[in-house]
Length: 342
Length: 106
Image 1 (cartoon, rainbow over the protein chains, first blue to last red):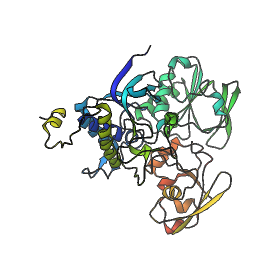
Image 2: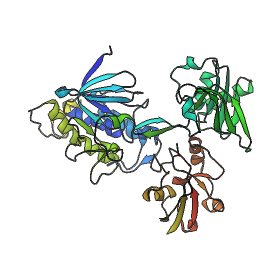
Image 3: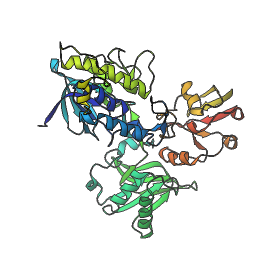
Image 4: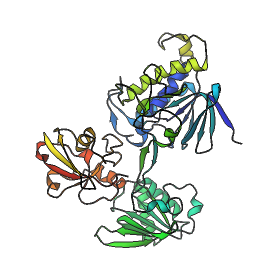
């Protein structure tokens, strides 16, 4: 039996809106757990544009995605949110009046009064190259991530890609694989130079091979791969014998399991009201890029506003019948105490 | 105004008006051209606006920039005429441009 984590609010998504929701809920004494499929906070700001400048955050003329994330983490520190990375929320179930049960693919179970979906464009999932017939080999011979290295011991491994994931796994798996081939479309890598150097040393020592080209087809039967057909950069096709293939083409956003939680959806977005940013289910809110309402703008600043209004209703759900006094952080000693500044 | 034609994998063609200064990707999204996903919204960070430049237009469109070359590692079936459409700025010189959309971005 899994231990159940009981909390006031579960926030799905640790992007800027999810992080700022911790702040707004925290001011109202609502404790939060934050779940994200990535291995770090920031959402799209971390995955898609950590180094890119953002120019439309109020009072910050220019800030990078990474810096905005750091500032938000600093801002919410007084509220001690608990983060659960590398988890995808698979299920959200209503438990009568008691609130909700939230489950992740990593086996975590939460009970909370309130669920805040701040999942942006959905969950980041590995890109699956559209090689004809690849589905038949997925999870038996083709893997988009490595969960257990041991499963690849003694295999003829083909790694495809030129980024950090491809290079890191090349270096980590080379000692345990029977043979290892790295395939990339060019002799240049966007991975860390040190990893590239290590890979080249392994090639020079005859411990692995590096080939130029792109996979066009797969050979094998009953889900067991025997070779990948590759088009070389000279236009000639050749086969690389392998019984495990790991394609690393980065991540893409998919709506994911949100569609199965019984919420009304409109074109893969969650309709909400503009007073509380609540979904069709009371107690489940949606803020940031994943929601829709008349006039919606997919801007980080809109998500911040949505978080503030959402928190007002969340307070009423947590404290039925209690009056919520509106206060400013500039003047309220009780808010300042929560922020640890008075 | 520059006319841009998107050719789908099945041969369907769609010609849209591109405003100088906008990117080919923005023009595609604005006109709901299928197959230009543009996950990242134009930050050259996702490689889901991959297109193939039709013969005769390569020189006018110009070469890939280094960031784009890196990002194309995350695209599928990259060819000599591959570009990320978010990195192509429309100008009057591109009036009549024809690009092919891959069967699938991913």
